[in-house]
Image (cartoon, rainbow, N blue to C red):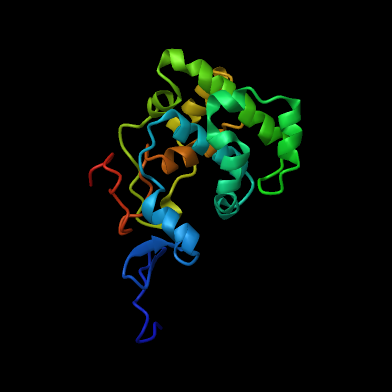
Length: 207
């Protein structure tokens, strides 16, 4: 039973914070995650550098918690030239070794090489409209409307199609689940649980 100082908690998996706002449990305690959820996650990203950064970080997150990646984000930006695709695309073996010796980031050789490969693929996409336009081209006609945390999907037909198209365009570490997480992060789908204070705030989907 909630104390007199704690607001009653909903049964849909959301948590009512001390500010009276409803958030998922993962964003309700850690101030860093709470700020990310409140201000960034699910908001539209339509520029190349921003999309390349999100795609790269989602790939590095595979198998890890997002909190780990978010805490290392500034170090990632410093290590990868602020995710400028042209700069990263020029990385060679010496840069791979530099990154493997950088304790500030996730040191995974396959993921580092994938970031370099994906930077070159990002540059190559410019003639066709660019990475952001490419990814947004897989926006579904409707967004999920989860009423509980357990109803949030982990992939979709569109994320599978996006993953397939990106692989064809030369990208790697872009599986359907990772691409669905990307689509959530950049506002292509809105998977905020109905009742969350962030539901419908992206401007992409009307309630």
